[in-house]
Length: 160
Image 1 (cartoon, one colour):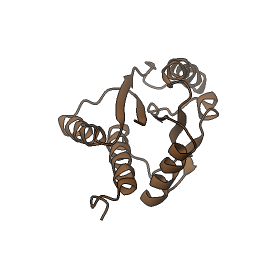
Image 2 (cartoon, one colour; image 1 turned 180 degrees about the vertical axis):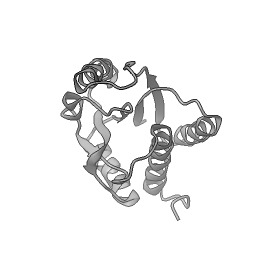
Image 3 (cartoon, one colour; image 1 turned 90 degrees about the vertical axis):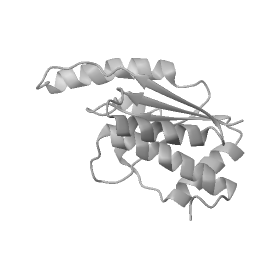
Image 4 (cartoon, one colour; image 1 turned 180 degrees about the horizontal axis):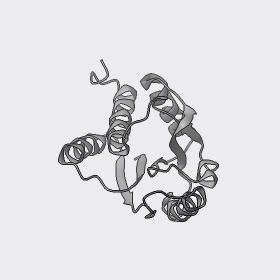
């Protein structure tokens, strides 16, 4: 069975985000082996300098690198990434599977972004939109799109 891991910097706090994320995680379990790992954000001062941000992202990067499953196709969500329709996203995941990969890993970075060296590891840099979304909402959106992609591949009516 194909495995999908989502690495998310930080924890969800709001009950409605937690409930939505749990619902899509449950639904995804019908299509794949799904795992969500919440990783701690590096604490920064109230008004961090660029050097402090870079150091924080580098420390987060070390933790992220350790958690990416070995051999997984790796996708980072980043504003400068490529935009895909739901159908093209589903097609991309299907291609990953047909290429013989047994797992995929998706990364949602912290509020200051993702270290450049981690972005460089990505097989795909994905953007939902040029708009800015709260990280908690982006997590729910990613889980929903993963579920939608699996539903499209399965030919279910969810996508209609």
